[in-house]
Length: 63
Image 1 (cartoon, rainbow, N blue to C red):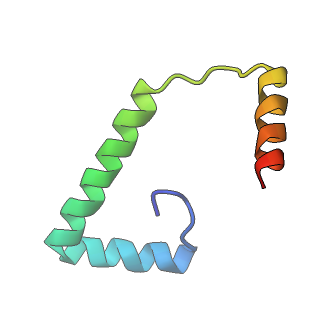
Image 2 (cartoon, one colour):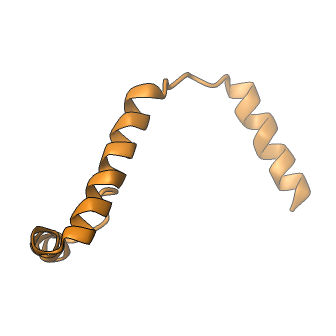
Image 3 (cartoon, rainbow, N blue to C red):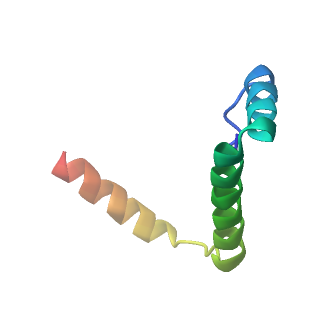
């Protein structure tokens, strides 16, 4: 659900379950808060194309 991987039916089921299960409700909300905090604190930077190419090549060489 947090990763937008659940289907509509799965999401409805999970929401229904979370509404009635305090343990799952607390775990879901904790994970949701952690994700939101990380998103607000992490800065996205553009990586130079040469660095991407270099890393890819090193991965290919190591396989």
